[in-house]
Length: 554
Image (cartoon, rainbow, N blue to C red):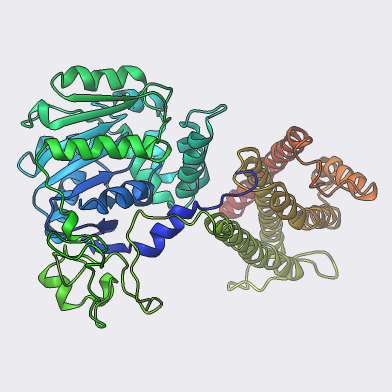
């Protein structure tokens, strides 16, 4: 994103107040927030393809202060519908929750319907937003679904983000999109691949045992990633469901229109019989108590919200994050907070604070740069220095091979053929190194084009590898000349001439101030280099295989 992303003040406050739980169940890693009185049947929120448990932080803040229990869950790495149903049921068993109310958006709505279909006794009501009933539409749009698990992370992220409606947005919708994009950057390749596989896996929703009166459908009237036809199918399937329409909200109305979504959620929970326990919320006076004093009690010093430190207490009641189920503390205890006052969740936000640095994006950029540098160093160490060691063995005073073979009785012709094969192998490794460098530059330009990184970072990374590229190609041409491969030298000469010409005119580095204007030209230039190197690599591979076969015949 251009200019980076600063976390909203209310989100920073939420993260400081509500603990994130991480528990392994079998082979699945579950991440979730669980906040509110434990005696209240929970509302479980399921995100869409581009969401995480964090996207429902506004609902957790608003509903928990009203006495409702809200659980926001990350979709784990499941690869088909049946696996999702079984994994989610195990998760509910571990956290000791038996009857639930589900709120799902997009893919989360589809998964909520699936669970309600296969486990009807556990689901008491449904709230659906931008949901769909079958996956055939998405399967048709993803013909490459069989290889999604092998697709690089940046391509998966780009595919997910292109599904979000583009164009000018209202400010609150634009802010919600920025927030979700920052969350997508935190997802791993396996997480994205599993979610896209769930979206394209052949599955559909059958009849539900749940009454239509226990279903609420919340939809937006503006454009979103889910086609209107699919949303209409949900309304037609459940004609008795309560319907709420929001004028605008985009793909993420729970972030862009939180007040309206929270109002509909509270109305739904009241209608299906969920009784809020406002008297159990810290900071809210209990009935008959003194209205001027807080009802919250100090916690035990030995309590901790970290699941890993709960020990035997988490085993006896895995669903409880606090020792007192009736009164969950608003501020989780930890070693860094010892303040005597506990402010109620959902109160004043931190809008007056200094702007926070874009921590996620900054960490992502630094991590990516470090990984790229480490990769290049290791690559050149293996594929660049090793071939030159072989070349040292190959070139002698008579320019013939002097490698000591295990079978000494082979003649000079055999040695010469082996040397020729090793020479082509050396060429192959050097060309592979050049291909990696050019592809890395194209990836940096593509990231810049889609606003994943800023122009300064993109230009810095490209300029870092340009001189190694020029030097490597120059060394390759020199080896062609020394080993007598005149045809290959002539084929590589135009590439060398172009690089020398750019360097002598001081036009080889990318200008950070002009990179956007020259983006298309820079991409075309490197695509031409890529095609040129692939052509040389094909010739090298052919002659390397030819020499290997000829050596075997001897």
